[in-house]
Length: 354
Image (cartoon, rainbow, N blue to C red; front, side, top):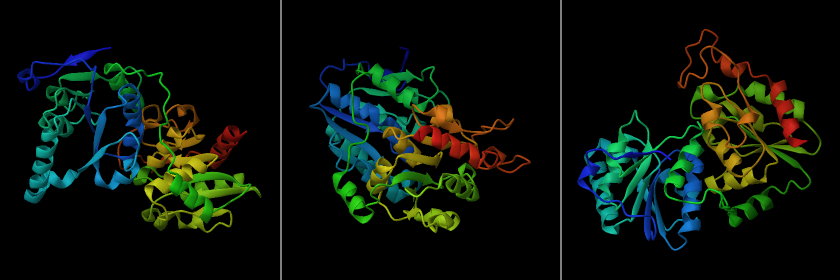
């Protein structure tokens, strides 16, 4: 395990207590949905080793439904990235920092690894601050212990390396996302679908150039059509503009903009397989161990693919891919996605369902 010493800021705090009895812990990981899902093993493993600890999470308010009521979370602290941009926002942020200092955390864990999150973690004045060392960000100067990224490229392995640095048992069993029974019962009542095989389809993504063409989704679904198969079209209301045609199928369940975040998770839990772009619900599917076909263009499946199922991701080898950019400048626009054939997707799905 490689530990990197903190920078000159942390030299003003010459102490690191052993992680023996942790009473109050703050996790800093505000966003996004997929990133927070991927970092949940740190929370679960912390509570396995320190069951009596009190854990708080600094989280974007839009993601509160993800962790609200979670058995391992005692408090959610609202984060607003725009607080830096206005006087009113700075006053709100200052008030939040004053409250976090008063709580006197034994351990602060920055899983965001950005300069901004590093500063905020330091300003909470926890007894020990630990974080991921992303060298381009320089956040390490604000940590008592900066944890180097491991050789494994996947983001989940980065977070697990932080867990390892805290002497947590990585082999301990845990439930990545506990069942929300109320939401589960609601969707079973509203859509019984008895005897049906349910295939989740996620046509949206925040970056437009991460979206596999809708007509390709239609083609793949046609190839998988069967009397006892239903397609759950999962996404937000903003996806309806380009993906509404998928919901018009007789074998489709229209969920675009129709579910809360906990309901979406329970729908994914109900699926037998998920076909998805590189987006938040893909990480939900992976966390729930659902067979997942990931469709990748500008991003890296080895880094952000469905954890444990990267082999099920489809991508096209091009000189520009993965470009890691939110817009495409290739002469064949979005060829990295459009060249993924519906036949390849349907065959991969059938293999996983066999």
